[in-house]
Image (cartoon, rainbow, N blue to C red):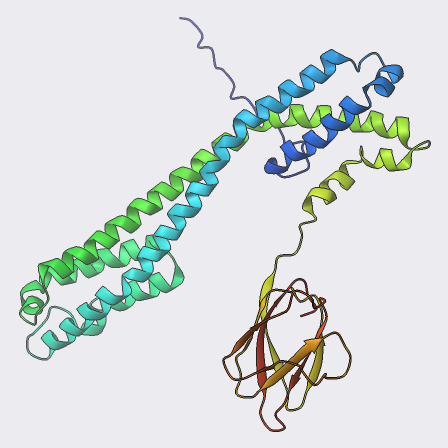
Length: 329
């Protein structure tokens, strides 16, 4: 009798790259570009660095580019999640109507359960918790009670269409939940299977960076920084702050200097008083614009990013909705 051959399950390769997957291409692009520019210095340092090395580096980047597309799995999961929770919220109104029909029926007929035990409250609680499995279990209980008491409830005006609408939402939630779980499995499998490919590109990047620092650290520290991975990661993560609206609350007679305002953006008086505003930090000029309640003005393009706002009321608070960048607005 032949001894069966047991093929061991391969151990997944451990992740070596120390950045987000979506950052690998940008980081490797920086390193690749620097290496191409400085290839003469690298070749003088070691024969390892030649045109073939550049070609291999490019090939490893191409391998990762081909694998980045599956990141859309995560994007698709987000869409499924939004649909799922939107459908959970949509169930509330059909449940409200059903609850009223159950109440009406309970005052005129004998139901198999008390209205509070019908199951509607359990479904609502599950929706509030965002627990899809709990919703499914609660809906199964609700369906049993609804079926057992269907005639009494339809006599109060409940219709097949209303029942079918509620059940269709329930089915859609279960379908979305299954799709979400599949996307989780697919994403985990994809990331695990591709770890080796990401690691290979990372290894080349680290090798080039290590050599670059050894070549330039003393004679050209600024250039050595271009081969320092932590510096490169910080460079791509330094996102410019996005313009945003803030509502400033002004006390009676309060004057406030506001920075980082965007010239050309809109300022709107959202309070119950009149608010004056002007360019810079100086005293109020005679022609300073005044915003009446719920009126807007465009910050002139000739103004700087620092303006002064003043609540002209001595008794009421003022509110100004204004757009700027950063924290100091």
